[in-house]
Amino acid sequence: MKIPYGYILINEEIIVHEEKADAVRSIFGYYLAGASLGKIVDMLYAKGIPSPSGNPKWGRAAVDKLLSNAKYIPIVGVETYMDAQFEQERRCNVDYDKAGRPRKPSRYQSPSLEIN
Image 1 (cartoon, helix red, strand yellow):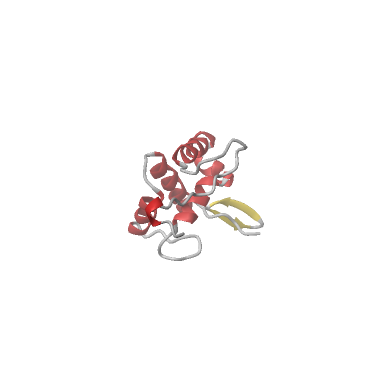
Image 2 (tube, helix red, strand yellow):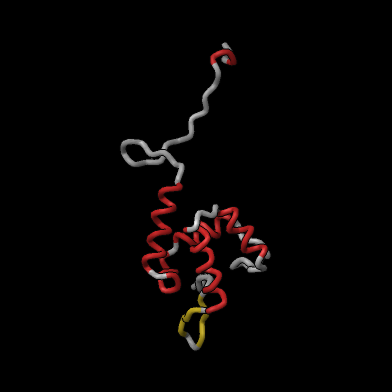
């Protein structure tokens, strides 16, 4: 079992690691303040906070996954977590069809470029 970022295993008990929990709270705070995933990555790098894998720079996907993970509710609280979920939905630029499935991106070609 992999322990989520912000937690630590002590005596077979998973508890909050306060230093990393502060980084988690910062990520949620920045996101809810309007920062993009890329901006959050830059802020974490500027503060010298390494990624969960130990790399000096986080990836946008890692930040996005952290924001979506309900295991962070004990660290940030239900209200902050739910606000982040609504904000992610609001910022989503994926279009859905009538059945609720993501639409495939369409590539349009100019009629003047058609090859016959």
